[in-house]
Image 1 (tube, rainbow, N blue to C red):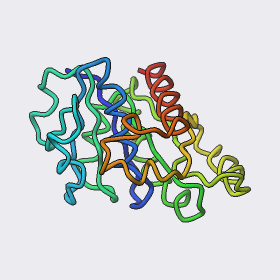
Image 2: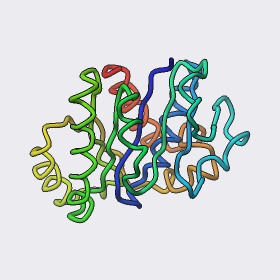
Image 3: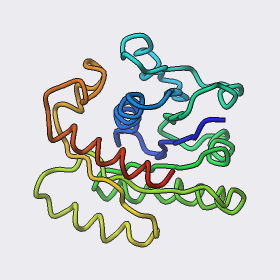
Length: 196
């Protein structure tokens, strides 16, 4: 069974699919990696065959039997019945959030569900990623303070960059020329490796 990293947040617009694609592409350079799209919108699955070296596959019950080394699961912008079973099979749940009051308020249900899963799967790890961060914004520091109550590490800060916005056109920031974005994804990749 592959190592499984699930990207989850019940709120839409926090950049889950963009983050999932960039991370999966980053890992695919070194290990046999797949990205499973469970979102009914299917925004990620449409890239199958466009992004080189990355298997983008639909989510189904047989997904855990594939011969991948690493599987990223991109989840929909709401908590569905399948979420707890997915968390139970995961090695790591990453909860990306924007540094905004509505996003941080909405994160609680996702983190509570992760907590439920951790009571059953004691090996399950979880971490936060501040996503779409505005430069020099006071709200970022305020968000970090608010997020402390969840006792989860913040393993990355991904800035609000045009190169991320273009991810679905380019196949990820690693194929582009934005060195800052590449550095952010590489740093986050290394943090995930430490957790796995």
